[in-house]
Image (cartoon, rainbow, N blue to C red; front, side):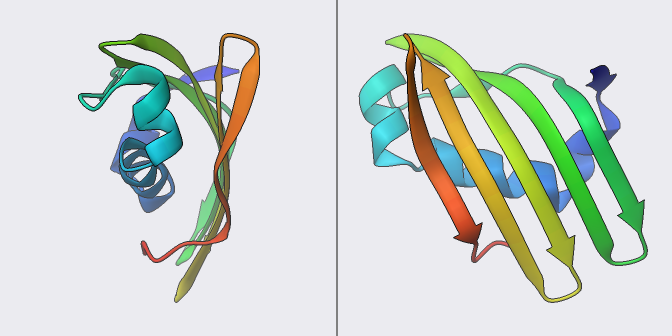
Length: 103
């Protein structure tokens, strides 16, 4: 894993974070006012033209606790597919699995 600060400006980072912060399952687990750390741990990130693929983890915290968001994502010119999970207290919740409205 490498520390990924540049990834924070990509749609494959911002879209999963936006969707996660609106997820009812996450709101129930850690609360409404979620914050993320200022970096992500990347194990893979490729970009070429309008195509991107990535795998990263980052922490999300709220008033009730914190956990780890894990994202596998691919983005092409007109579509994005994400597999996003959130792990907390030994449980893993699916946030997104498949196409997302975010571009």
